[in-house]
Image 1 (cartoon, rainbow, N blue to C red):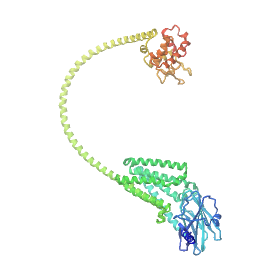
Image 2 (tube, one colour):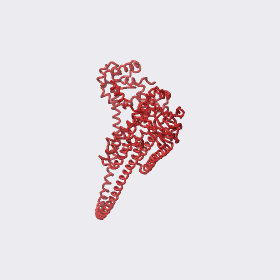
Image 3 (cartoon, helix red, strand yellow):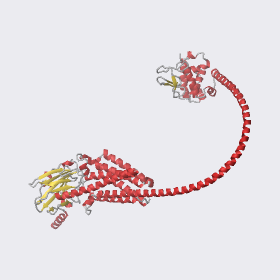
Image 4 (spheres, helix red, strand yellow):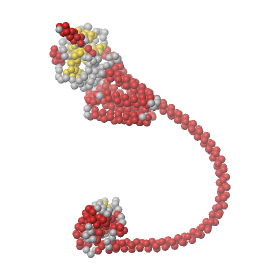
Length: 637
């Protein structure tokens, strides 16, 4: 039994990994803390103080870091990190700790003061830039004392983003050298962006091709994104507004991916060469806009999901490969090469962020995306230049073809001119011959014209006589029409007619409207609004508009036909039938005669009966013509 307990103790001891003490001597100018150099403690309550975590109760609760770099896997928790450094002798050179990830919101360092106590200092992306130890994009903490022996350093970290906790110990000389080199590299990178932008702006102004404008917007978005994630933008553009750090990289990343896809469409002529891929790109642009608006107005924490940019990056890369490989479009080869380097830089960056970059040099892993963007910009410029060369070559070829065609046209013109000269001579001779013949014919025609003039004089006399007879006939026709109308009116007033006979008197809407207008304004027009007596025609035939107040009175207004829903000539006939039968005709009979639904006839018949009762005295003794007295709502005085 004791043997098995001994074995278990041995195995558990082998499975433990103790924190490694980092030894620093005067020859070491820089040390990056990795793996078991760092112990960590997760504070899910965010309430632990420095005195609590340095007490004996928490001494054994720190865990050895299992990753290449420590991470804050639970972003709602605070993390405490502990490192141990052993100096072989008192160091005379000033040193400091540096944290690389510029998106870290809050870092608090506890540095031994040499007297058994600790000095606290704070940094982070949530604080204004001027509160940092140095005017540098990273976070630095000064080591106050570096005496011989072992020292323990504590760091408290809290961040809404998932960050790599990269801790570096550097001497001041090394820090200055590194910083100068780094900022010189940034100057080179952003300087190239400015140069590329200015060059393409000149090209856009020269040739007015939209692809240059989209390329400028794309590389400016790249520059703003790189400045945002590197901390350069915070340092130089909004040092007193740290809240903008939470939006800047997300906004610039949206414009970067959007303008990248638009530039891809424009450069590779995707709409013409690959319409289906063009539709897919438009869909992705639309979805990316929706996601951007959700991040901007609903939850800006979603800006952290940068991995979605893999989708537009892959689509642009695939589009370039397809158009180059399948459609043999030569400028796409540089486009594909540029996106290959960007794609590779993106993959290396993801590997570096996930902590799997053990065998990748630190600078390459950290700046892989920047290198990818730089190479992509170079090769995209080559792609644009290659496109311009191809267009120039086509233009030169077209110019040569035009010159050649102009030469052919000139030769053809000379040949045609010669043929035309010969034909003109022949035609001139023919015309002269024809002229002689025409002269002889003209003499004959003149003789014939004299005969025709005599005949025309006789015809004019006959025409005058015919015209006089037509005038007499026209007067007879007018009299005949008037007689027919009088007979029809008399017949209407004398007997009960069927609808076809009645329609001869009132065949259409205009004849009915004219009858109503004559009745309404028999004694003159007076505006019902302002009592003005002057009017002009309205928008509808037979309406009258007041010239003073512009009120337009309908011909149906103030008649029983106002708001009428059946044809006006049928409404006339219905009134006529009701009056002729003295209201005794049934609605069924009316429906049969007029061809309107019985229910509608009943409504109208009821209305007319009521009016007939009200105007019994007015229509008494009027005969068959009395039906027209029912039309107006009130009989004018």
